[in-house]
Amino acid sequence: MSFLIRTKKTFSRFLKYFFKNQESRIGIYGPPNAGKTTLANRIVRDWTGDALGPVSEVPHETRRARRKEGIVITGSNGGSITIDIVDTPGVTTKIDYKEFLEYGLEKDEAVKRAREATEGVAEAMHWLREDIDGVIYMLDSTLDPFMQVNIMMVGIIESRNLPVIIVANKIDLPDASPSRIKSAFPQHPVIPISGLEGENVELLYEKMIEYFG
Picture 1 (cartoon, rainbow, N blue to C red):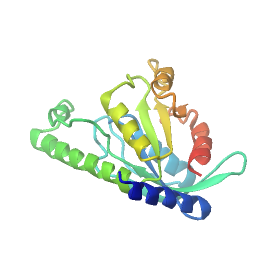
Picture 2: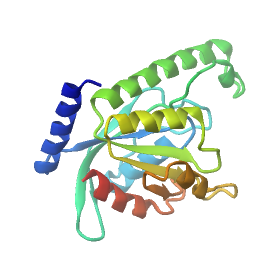
Picture 3: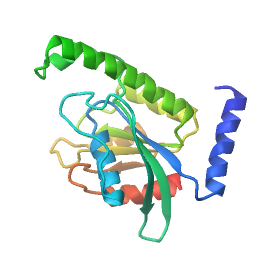
């Protein structure tokens, strides 16, 4: 990124901080099936009563970025933020149509989904380059966080100078190990939650107000 573009982005974030009525656009990123849409739905439902999109055990159920505007989140100390939440497709280094076949999809549908998912990842990266003010990076705490895609994505987010909160999801599962995620990314706040059960989500809201406000 050129110095001029970096300066414009920094100035834009300064203006949003100075003029509190402006909304920050927060992207939920992470690998497939980390629980991004589950969390996005919970955030939207908790603060607006709506929902953002369907969830599924099939990878890449979200194949286009989905956005909900004007969400006001308030904290226990009276602080608040107004955000647009953007649920993005799962980011991965390779999308193979064969992984969809394992879930009973026909080949034509699997190929179609793989193509749409690939286009969705490209769209998500475009959002990250141009339109995102902060990132919730979502990880499945039952899996090894030291994967190439996670290291790459966190590095890209850091290069954009974007505030990031890392969420260690699925702590309701017996194999969950949020401590592995904390050891992988000690430079960023890590919030362990269960997006499905709602455990620790209030703590995440407080951190969002602190980091994205």
